[in-house]
Length: 140
Length: 189
Image (cartoon, rainbow over all chains, first blue to last red; front, side, top):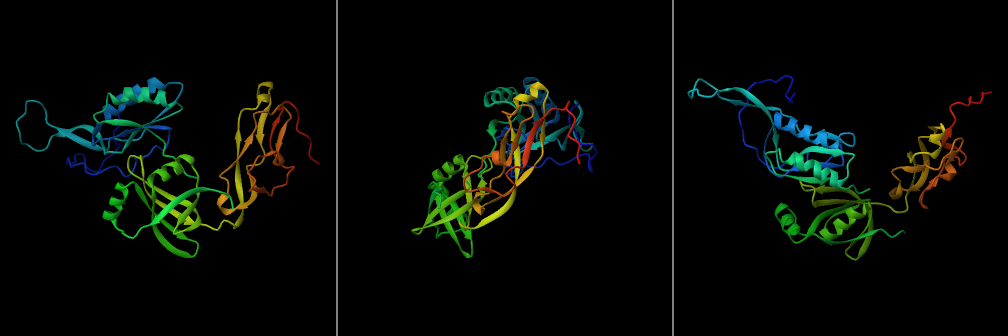
């Protein structure tokens, strides 16, 4: 089942503009490789689920997939063939807000080529341009 | 004094975001050198040098500024949002002579060959006490357990540490052993 919040304070939210870059969630934390967004956009819960299935099927038995985004925002839509007016539409889907720099998915237990192949399958399903990133080097 | 990664720094007179942005366009990275009861200095270093420093992974650096060389550690690196280049470096001056005594964790590495013969690995010590220069405190000490057969053990004296690090824990202390689980444990007196 696709991801969605358990409980929300308000069922419907305003659309709002996505401004700026991701200053949180922009580094690889759990795995060794990450899929980083280069654009802003909305990624729906269904898309996240499709990406998860594509990634886990590729790395099954070898690696582990981490999902770093969550669809927190509701998007409403109007039923087909209805006239305008009569208030805001009903919630239709849940989306995650993605800013440039956001790490969407992470992979552990695979090498660079494996991660590239796996994320290629995932990238085809996403509505934003993405790139493969590794862990940020640590100076110690 | 041991040779460390050398950073050539230039004094930075023009401060503020606009000047810093111009500085970055010229291929330099703004940095601050501070601490050790001296004035904080605004400097800039070559972006290429920082890339080499990050690739080398060395924390301790010799900063050459105004004809003098000062020992410093990289306190913080600020990255851009895509993690492709460093935007700012914090350099903390340190006393290269100061020594400290700390507990350092032990990390087991490898799979003992005696595991196939029914042996079981047991780690008896989780950390050891070491005395070393403040700037050379190891993050952990690696215990190689791959060559262990059933009945073998690794003692503190077997641990490989850098020359500047001295282990204070008794040298005959057993760190890890591969024991035979079928054999009864010796009765304690």
